[in-house]
Each structure stands twice: as C-alpha cells, then as structure tokens.
Length: 220
Ligand SMILES: N[C@@H](CCC(=O)N[C@@H](CS)C(=O)NCC(=O)O)C(=O)O
Image (cartoon, rainbow, N blue to C red):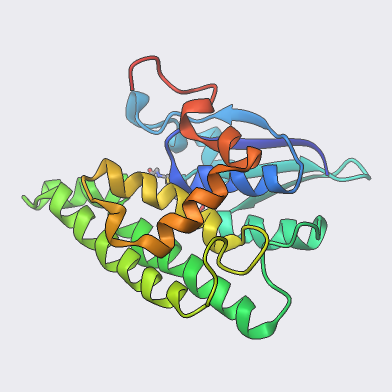
C-alpha cells in the first residue's frame, strides 16, 4: 500500500475506527478532511459521492505496487482488508470461536448502536418531534450493556482477547466517547472501561483521537 489517504471527519466514530486500525498496522495515512456539517455536508458533493456512493466517512484510498488506485468504504471492511494485507498485529483472533466473538462485539457497535445515534438518524428523530438525546442514550445504553455482558464471558481483564486490541476494542473506544457526549455514565460497564484503559496506553489510539485531528475546530 502506498500513498494512503483517509477521508475522515475529526469527530466521526467510524473515521476514528479507521484511524486506529491504520495506526495499529503502522500505516500513517494522509488525512483528507470531509466536513460533515459545513454547507450541508461535504460528503454530499458530487466529487465525493463518486468515490463513496454512501456519502459517508470514512473512505480509504491507496495505490498498489503496480500504481493502480483502490478505494474502500465501511470501517469494518477496512479492518478485514488490513488484517489480510498487513497480518500483524492481528485485529481478529485466529481461533474460530474467538474470531466470531470479536465480530459479535464489533457488530454490536457497528450495526446495533452507531446507526441509531448517527447524525442522520438524530435529524430524523428531530423531524418527528422526538427527543434526540434520549433516543441516542437509550440505544447506546442497550448496546453497551449487551457488550459488557458478552465481554465478561471471555475471562480476560484488559484487552478482550489477550495481549492486544481487536476489532472489538477499535469499535468500543469511539463509542464510549459518544456515550459520554450523550450524557451516559460508563461506570456501569467496568469490563468495557478496563479495555478502554488498556487501549489508552497505545500510541495508535492516542493519535487517532478526535482532539489530535487536523480538522478539529478550535472551539468544538
Ligand atoms: N458503517 C459505516 C458507518 C459510516 C457512518 O455512519 N459515517 C458517518 C459518520 S460516523 C457519516 O459519514 N455521516 C454523515 C452522513 O450520513 O451524512 C462505517 O463503519 O464506516
């Protein structure tokens, strides 16, 4: 992989996952900021939609050794790709059952929580006269409680699967940040907080944090 570019928004949790995964694999992409709010959202521009028809971030772009340019959307697809392209450190355990468990935990966040509290959904809740904060907090609390219950069965006390982070922690850390933004107290999830604390020791997590991004506003 050469000339790696990540189209990203500083506070997007899915972009954050991609940034962590790239960092864990030792890849420092050029960040291409896509502002999700300004002028109705740069993700809707014709040039961007031509690259990502879902009109979302993140978007990964790179050149291969032969000089061909490739694109990939969806943060979990990026992690699956990176695990094949750059096998170490593995983001999915080799053991089949543990691999399934890692995907299970990651999907609780990716499909069970995040779509229920992303900006598009919250705008819909607003338009229907609902309470956006209550809606988001309810979805996050339900998903994190499920994740806590499943993670507790693993018998580990820092990283879920042993010595390093998996796709599950990569999804968890940005989701806990969002939980706090929506007013939830994550103290109810001690197993998840232990995994988050282990991740906080790693440079790949620190450099991927929204506050470390080039498009972070001075006054968020
Ligand atoms: N499942 C996707 C989720 C992507 C996603 O929801 N991106 C959000 C930011 S976290 C986005 O681009 N929202 C802008 C919009 O939908 O207009 C992934 O993991 O990459």
